[in-house]
Image (cartoon, rainbow, N blue to C red; front, side, top):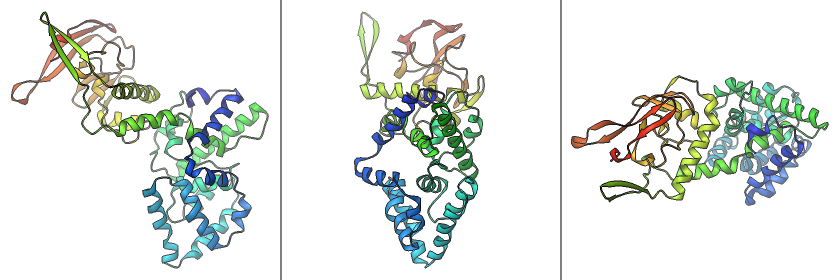
Length: 372
């Protein structure tokens, strides 16, 4: 079940299953630390000396929050300025205010914890979510990505303006408030007090994550030049027959890209012309730093050798206007117009040739013999 299906679901068993999935994604090497911090007593942290609090952040919290070695290293290097500059008193004041401020006040709490060297909004919210799970959830790029997948979500426009990897204080307040409201809603529906913003953030972080990670692994193997399927052209009685040798990995990649498009279709505006960079920015809400996706592969009026074999079955959502400019019209659009193939001929010049035709959303002819 994806987040779009779950968000308005009123079956408690489905929400519990989604929550349980969180621990399936924790690395075995991090499991003990995960369990320890999941059971963290805020009073234990409150009563720490400043040296103990420093070590807790440096040796435990940062390891939990920053699982990528390079990110952990840069955060620690920045944080270690407290020792290098002999300014632990600054950290002591932040530590004190963490427990003096009313956790109901999202902005005030985030603003204070964000002052810790090395922490941004994501890092600050993560620490607060461990200390005060009834009031805070971790906000990061995954939370933004999942919320954008929810169709007809009333705060979707606001969220779409956020930069997932560079969240502001205002963004953090909005996202945490969303998690608070969802937790309250579930507690009311299920007549319980179990649900907290922290549990909502666990679900937003983990749901669909296995699928998305699989897509990312595939994407990360693709270079900036799109890998081409190995196509063999066999001549038999003057008829050209395409035999597609596309590997299973490449077929899965195409399927994953179409799935990614479907998850963000609602963010495109009908009949609006988008530049390629704008399309990739929207898709990167699903695929992190993907640059090799070619929008023309999903156009009604463009075809190439790579997509010729299954062109009729492919997703079509754009109309090619000119280089790097595509008009979004959506799937099953009653398109009427020519299908063109652009091929490189002599002197390295591209020549366009009409090879097919759509009439009211149906392909009336397509001459694949010309796509050479």
